[in-house]
Image (cartoon, rainbow, N blue to C red):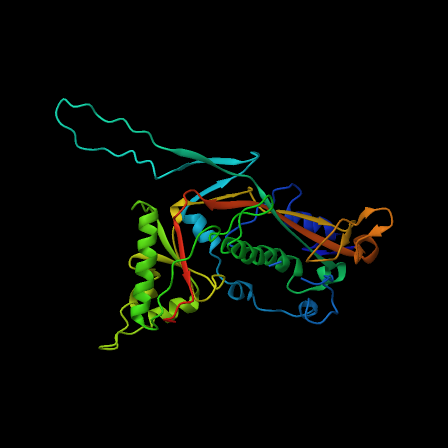
Length: 353
């Protein structure tokens, strides 16, 4: 099981180890990070899977086909931590109901003593993982290398999966982080199908955020779908037909507040959040492993242990050794959430778009 690498011939797994590294922390740039049906390995014959890579050269379209993700943009505006070898990251979160504010006092009068209220917010690692299987032949003969493509796709598709969790309304569990909408009631959208309705919506979101944040905003940001941004930028005034928001929104902001756009944000939905309160904690890097010896349950929806009791086996399973296949596994420790409550506001069913 050998192939050409440069001017030398060496085992294929040695090349994979060289590409991914032999430790548990292969250095991969995580600039953008969904996973139903029984899975089959990529081979040189199955139509629509990897056959188009054999003896052909394709343009690098992966970057253009992958939607821009919200998660890394929020992480850049908020607090970003790595777990390292720690089992958790604990941060102080302030309860704004208790104000430590100065006040005017008379000469010689006693100065008031106030106590702030803080509570710990703890983030423990949540694990994301995926395995993909390819045949030795497709690894050897694909042009460009399917191994390099899959490594990139694993990261990019995981970015979409992270956003789907980030933007939902599901509460945190032992398995996953909470979505931004978890426990957050939505702001009622305007029913006016014009620029007047748009202005009413942004005013309602801004009022709700300022009220709940006690006026203390550090890095507010809009989260919007690309189509809604376009629709808003083209809204015209009734009187003269001008597009007052077009120029600013083309520069990526609205009322001076940056817009984080992605197709992963549901259409007809707008968020206004204080991104400074977004906390992201990850492992040092995604961890890649490769094997040609394992037995794998080839299932992408409800994978199970190969055998849970005598005579009970998962199906379908594949022996990588017997079928001359190689598995590539990616694991990522990650958790995220908001340090303060009330600093996520959202609305949907927008009438103006």
